[in-house]
Every structure is written in structure tokens, then in C-alpha cells.
Image (cartoon, rainbow, N blue to C red; front, side, top):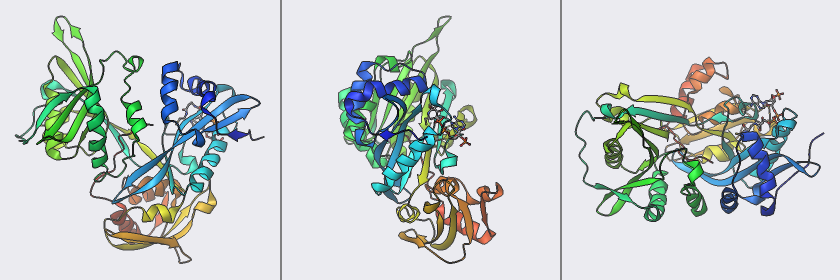
Length: 405
Ligand SMILES: CC(C)(COP(=O)(O)OP(=O)(O)OC[C@H]1O[C@@H](n2cnc3c(N)ncnc32)[C@H](O)[C@@H]1OP(=O)(O)O)[C@@H](O)C(=O)NCCC(=O)NCCS
């Protein structure tokens, strides 16, 4: 029997939050819940009820997502949790159907999420559309191979000033990177809250800004773990967010990060796989890079999503999308697109290739390869169509999503 589903009102947040706490194994503090209230879109919340008890939770953020050469409104699924007593009874599946209906009603052509485990969401048609990287390097090996002169300067800023500067820099990057999610003012406030119990033994946020003629072109937000062993400083610096709108700004900010004294190890998270550091460092092998799935995407309106991006080369492609979870979202489509825009409509022509919804969604922002998917048996098509599809869907910059939600 399906359970009733409804949105919640703000006063219900503490009881609703207990589902997250039980599913994600943590205890929320009152101050956290008060802050969450300011960003949570209650009209998009998903509460699954068993009698008067909350047994499943979810919600969605209304994002604008940058695509190759464009942007689209997007529903960002969040807070998905089911209490341990009600697992594997189909509650997640029920919530996904509810969410997809809601996203389509808002005319958002796709849903995105960040997954706690990479096993869960492909069955619903999601594919890993960006790759997250984390870096770790010993400070003794952070020298650059060549001088990288920059005309600006790096200076430290306090939290209040940073709060004013950071959003503009972040927004300016979205014009060049597919995969960026918009942040509202309330989300910026939340992101910079810096509650003590979130710090995991590290310092409060520190901010450094790179500017040229008083124009901020980049920033780094970082924390430090002060650590000593046998009289030697072996501190760690964690660069939580480093954003630069020019390569010079990025080089200057990494130089700054690598110059902080009493630090032995520098770590950075939620970074792009394609990084300037790999060509700046004299000894790049010293940087340990770990990769994993980043933002997951799920197309719900194939034509609207595909005209919301541009294509690296001019081309025409007739393809079939197999969507087992939501058959009406699949079908055969004709895409005619290029660097200046695209048209896409349903078609009765013979498809040149067939792909499952998770495969197409994974390729949406330019990451991955239809050829590899075909080698895995998830795309069927002749070599010419595969090659054309890969050239069209690729982009000069690999997508990156530095936002957690
Ligand atoms: C992940 C979670 C939400 C799944 O909820 P659920 O109600 O048990 O899921 P469903 O019963 O609808 O499962 C649907 C299918 O997904 C599979 N599945 C669900 N969770 C899975 C997991 N963690 N790993 C592998 N498969 C999983 C189920 O086996 C089922 O497969 P079937 O249809 O072949 O039987 C729940 O286990 C949970 O709250 N986990 C902890 C919090 C979390 O990780 N949330 C996700 C945040 S992105």
C-alpha cells in the first residue's frame, strides 16, 4: 500500500528532521534547524506519512543550472531519507515519482541531485553528469614549473566583506563552466554560517581575495588544522572553495594557499577533474587526485533539456531514449544542433542510436562518452552515429559542480 505524501509547514521541521537524523546518523541542533528554515523550500518538501509519523523525507531546490553554452531551470532533489524501520518497501520509489511530477509541473526539464551512494539512482534514470575531484599535496612539492606572473594581489578579508564579494565571483564563473548551480542570497548566508560543530576540529573560515585594480577576480575559502609532532608543525590546510574567473587569478590563489606557513599538507575538495594545477606544478605526480561521481542529472523533458544547451559541432542526430521508470519521457527524437543553438522534437524516423535515460542524462553536460557507453552495452548505434554524437555532446570544458545541497 503506498503511503500518503504531502508537503510540510515550517513548524513541522523538527519532527521531519528526525527522519534525516535517523537516516544520516547525526543529531541536528536547534540553531541548524532555524537556519535551514531560511533556505528550505517548504512548498517543494516531500513528507511520507505512516499515520501521523514522518517515515520518508525529501525536498527540492529551484536552481538554474549552467549547461554547455546555456542554462536551464532545474529541480535539485535533496534531503532524501527513509527511517530504518520502513526501508526497502518502495518509499524512495514513491518519493521519486512525486518529485518528477512536481518538477514537470514547474516546467523544469530536469532533476539533479548529489547521491550518498552511487548505487541508488541509475534505476530512476539519473546518470553521473559531473565528476568531483579531491586533491592532496605535500607543501614541499607545490613549486610551479615556470613563473606565472599575475598583475593583481591577494589579500585577506573578513567574513562580512567576503559575504559581499564571493557571490559575484561565483556567478561570473557559471558563464564558462557547465554544471554550476545558482545560489540564492539565503543559500550564501547558510553556506558561510560556519557553525562550530561543523568544523571537525579545524579553524573558522579564512578568506583570501585575488583582485586586479580593486576588481575581485577570485577567492579562496579555507580552514586550517593546527598540528604539531615532535616540535615540528604538520598542519593541514583545507581549501573548501577556490573560485577564479581568470587563470591568473587561479594561479595566484593556489600560490597563496601553498605559501601559508606551518602547513605540511594541503587538501582541496569538490574540485574539477580538469585542473590548471596539473600544468602549473613542476612535479604534478605529487598531487594525489581522487575522483568520484559529482552531480547526477535526470532529464524529464528531453527536447526542452537538449535545446537548453549548445553543441560543439553542427550535426543532426535521430536517437531513441529508453526510459524504463518513466516510459512517456522516452521515445525517438531528432536533434539538430550546433554552437549557435539547437532544435529538438519527437520523430518517427528510424533512430541512428539507442541510449537509456541514465546514459543520455550522464552525457547531458558534456561529461563521458557515448562510445564508452556502447562498449558497456548501454548504447546501440553504428560507429558513425556514435562518433557524431560524441563530437556534438562534448564541450571545450569538462563540466564541474562545486555546489553541495
Ligand atoms: C537510500 C534510501 C533513501 C532508500 O529508501 P528505500 O525506501 O529503502 O528505497 P526503495 O524501497 O524505494 O528501493 C527502491 C530500490 O532501490 C534499491 N535500493 C535502495 N537503496 C539502496 C542502496 N542504498 N543501495 C542499493 N540499492 C538500494 C532497493 O533495493 C530497491 O530495489 P528493487 O526495486 O530492485 O527492489 C534509504 O535506504 C535511506 O534513507 N538511506 C540512508 C540515507 C541516504 O543515503 N539517503 C539518500 C541520500 S542521496
